[in-house]
Amino acid sequence: SRSTKRIPQNNTTMAGGKIQKKRHGGGGARLQGGIPFEKSKGQHILRNPALVDSIIAKAGLKPTDTVLEIGPGTGNLTKRLLEAGVKAVVAVELDPRMVLELSRRFQGHPLSSRLKVIQGDVLKCDLPYFDICVANIPYQISSPLTFKLLSHRPIFRCAVIMFQREFAMRLVAQPGDTLYCRLSVNVQLLSRVSHLLKVGRNNFRPPPKVDSSVVRIEPRKPLPPVSFKEWDGLVRICFNRKNKTLGSLFKQKRVLELLEKNYKTMQSLQLAQDSGTGEEKMSPYDVALLANMVEDLSMETSDEKEDDDMEMDDADAADGRTSFKEKIMGILQQGDFAEKRSSKLSQVDFLYLLSLFNKAGIHFS
Image (cartoon, rainbow, N blue to C red; front, side, top):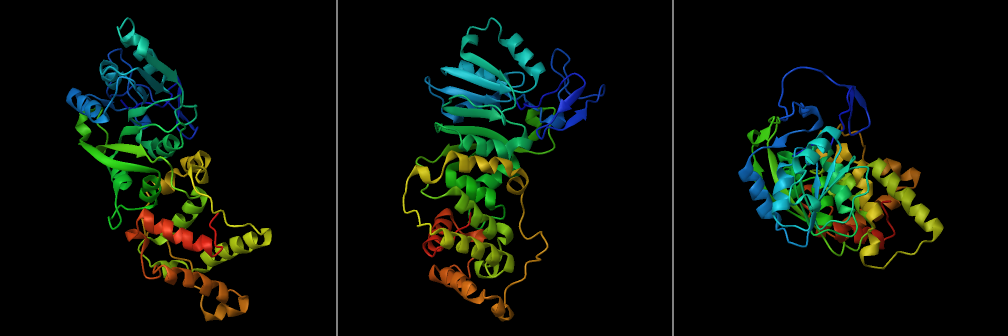
């Protein structure tokens, strides 16, 4: 089930640390003990046993697996994970009421010795070793949790997670798809993502306002030989207007000024281009930085912002930037990228484009 938000007696703590007054009374679904579910905190209990069994089957569990479950809630999925014969289940739950409910449910259970419950915020606590993550999470933590998992070391085998349908479709979107965005490119650089199941809202109690999907995420090993700060700097520029040509994007004054500043800084420091390869190029710390980019990575759309970036024209020659602009355009033309659009470029395309810029001394971090 999906429940990781702390709900104290008189107020509630949300993911961002804000305190809200708890509303007493009212309707809504409740546990057997009369504890109300908090829909605003992402507490929607998965109540369809057949769906739970399907998730377990698609997870590909092994007897030697330690399974991480996030937001176990009342323990419906937890019970099936234990019965699947795994080595151990580590459940991270923020709501103390749900932790108490779990302890009551599994007290005296023959498999209770394989269950460890950690009370805490999954985004803030240090995660233990695990082989696979199986979870039905609060949707408001989808983006930071995804990148926290991808930054976890040692690298786990896979994660099978329930997401809001649109977020899931962005994760698996391919070049040319309407939902293809910076989130798609970044997650797919770090992992292989596949869609497993569509899940209707009526499979939950209480029903959420949106449908869901179960996605499988398999971290790439080794990681691509690229600095993630460089990578995200390039992708951020490219997806600012994903349907504009790259030639048009890189003519913008703001972009040229940023790149020229980086270029001069690198030149003054006389930093040789790092030609090394291997997993060290992209560190877990680099990946973890994305955990703070919730809003612009989770449900970003394209071409909705005011296009207030002016292109540099010949009148800017007096600024001495024309030659740098020509340098940038030359790089784009060298790789035949000037007329291409980010919405249709693959990870391989972006990696090639980044390598062309780096070879010319142009950096994005």
